[in-house]
Length: 177
Ligand code: IMP
Image (cartoon, rainbow, N blue to C red):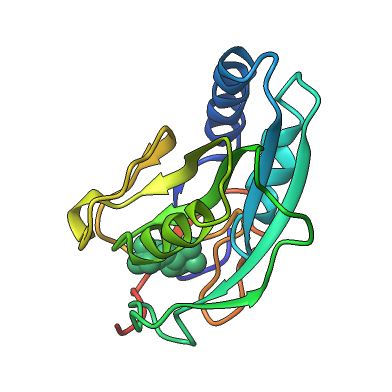
């Protein structure tokens, strides 16, 4: 492991939890029209692993979102930087996110996607920081709850780096907010 970094959730722990989530989603969405909507960039590894644990026909689409810039706390100004490539009306949309922190991004996304008339709209997030919630966010499938620390790895970045780490970690010392 790199110096200045501490692992908090290991590779095997992530894989085991992703397998459980995939099995649960497989049960819940049997016979439905499942469309995974992954939020870029942070959820790309989670999506790749999760979709292979779902034993159902499904489609995948991507939404690019930006709110952070290079800082570690949200600017609160959320922007769609790249929209879905296919309409999602009539589909069972499951939003796949890396982390719900303040909840502002997910709230914005859910409000936006709801206007497109999906048959259903649910949320699957790998991580949740409940201590930082600023708005109430419904989470239907959750990987892990994390404390109020800035996490990196398994898709999550700090200033664009660390996404390729196979585990979830924290920088030590932590980055300035
Ligand atoms: P929210 O709008 O505050 O809930 O933030 C959601 C987005 O902020 C996530 O999709 C991440 O891209 C980013 N984010 C929030 N917390 C962290 C963190 O601890 N590490 C890396 N990215 C984070």
